[in-house]
Length: 370
Image (cartoon, rainbow, N blue to C red; front, side, top):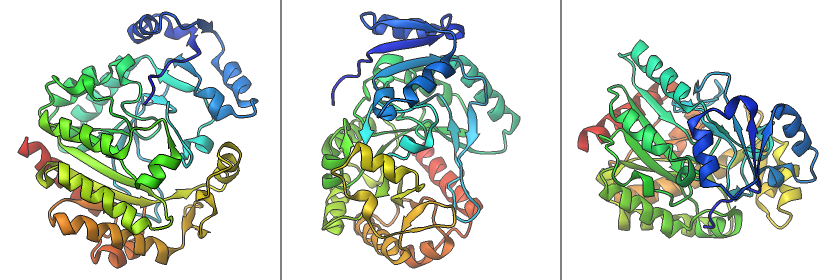
């Protein structure tokens, strides 16, 4: 992994007075920074580039976020959702995975951080206190990699202690990096889960530009376990390719060679799915890749999905590989139907409420074991 260094840091006028802005400008003191009174005009300019996604990754935009920070995971009634909450701290990623749905999902291609971070903590605290009887699983990895910029922002050094003091929530930091240095000496009380998106070696090597290798990610997980953190793994997206069964089995075997099952909070699976608009973006940005040309059909949510029998076979394969090592690790599917659950696992949580309850219980067990 190469260190991140933006070509330019653009600072919204209202963002200049925040501590996070000052810290980032110190960390990148040799990088030109420009005050930007009208960020929308800048975003519109980047969107006109031949490769707006690639151009956006070369710069950093510092903004104040005007909306809600804590949001429900975007889901659809046609599929079972895990029911977690997104802590919205920024947009975009320093990595460049060919399959990334953010390439067509976000209107803003610039790598963006919301510098009014303390507002996010205040809103989260108020939400948790308003519903003390509810359990909240919160993640920061939906619209950005949770740790890609952490060496420079050090947000984990505030987030982890914040969630350590809560009684009805956990934080999940999801990443494809090995940027775990700031986590080492933090007091977490088992309430921060560090998780890694994993894939086969072939997909990692060919489709995940800038990401850490599979072995390196698992070794980072092993270190976090040594520091007392629960860990998780996400096979999402599963991409069907030649010998995928063997390739994914090797990744699963590597996990259990290095990580005790008792310290794994959960493992999720989800096959590659995308809105139709992503295909031309992938084709233009990654002309050598073959991943958008598989056997896809439009799903009930409008996304292109592998044919159902192909998805079920993939899930059965990976599930069997996991169960070969442990019959207790919580395994779940991301955004699939009750039918697919039943045919893949032989059981189903039936609906979003059932899956949420299952994961709340898994989270509580992981916290209690720390």
